Image 1 (cartoon, rainbow, N blue to C red):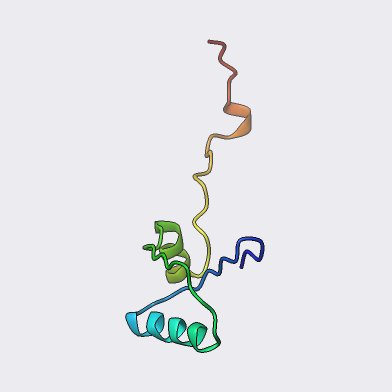
Image 2 (cartoon, rainbow, N blue to C red):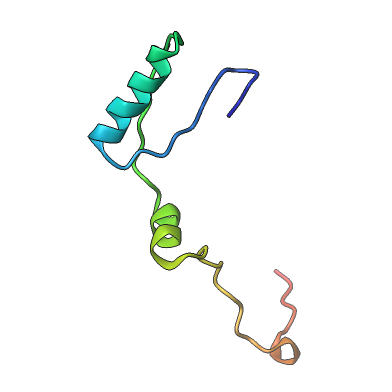
Length: 71
């Protein structure tokens, strides 16, 4: 929730949920100025399927085998 801008982020999984959220908000007398929907990113999908975030690729080169290269 961004109280300065009045933005609220609500994860929606179906059209029915979107309808329910809009109904709940408007029934309380709140006027919506816009609604934006987005598809989940690959990271969000991975998190929802596995329960943990995807990690960045790890450098598997042992520290003592690394060499400094001047370009």
